[in-house]
Image (cartoon, rainbow, N blue to C red; front, top):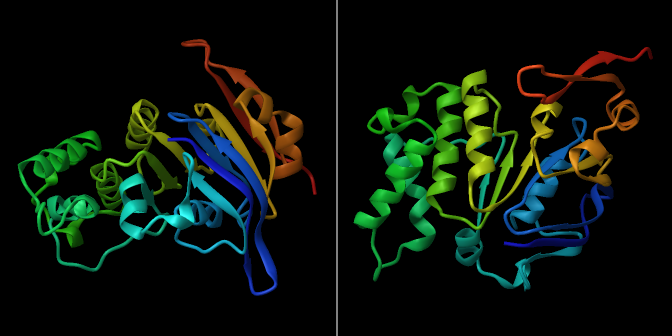
Length: 255
């Protein structure tokens, strides 16, 4: 699904949190959103997901304005995993993931075998099939994060939004999740703090003070000059001799 925004903005009172964001993301693209804390990444994702009404600008999913769609129609197109996603319900892991099928269910189309198969597939995709019967309250933070992502996958969205998806995950599950995301046949927008992880995206957008200040392929955006300006760090590009992957080593710049 193609995603477009035009002059998108949101204010908290008189304070601009996101301002003037114009962006186009191609179908099937994995787009990384980076920036310092408080730069507006999470708010931008919530605007794209339709969870916040924009103070300015518009969002389109394909050729359809987001504002013209019902919540059910949006939920059939977009899945969003927030940074602080939580639930207080007494649910099993399987039931929590099954909630992702809600936009597709109705009185005439109740939960059935096809939905159960989608739930099982989503659990397997995040490596949680062995805990399908466990109670939500017994899960660790990393396990809960994987279940939230499985629930998003169970929606079968065309656009997947992820806000800091590797939070709480150990390094193995971070790498496994990013590999899964890059293989999904959907458009993905994910906010990341780890700039080395962002190198694996098709394109990167850099947020600063609510504005999109740079956008393009990682090699052109993540330059030492841009990193020093935006994050106040020095960066040295290193090449892994095992597979020639480029990685950054960072150091604090003197204040």
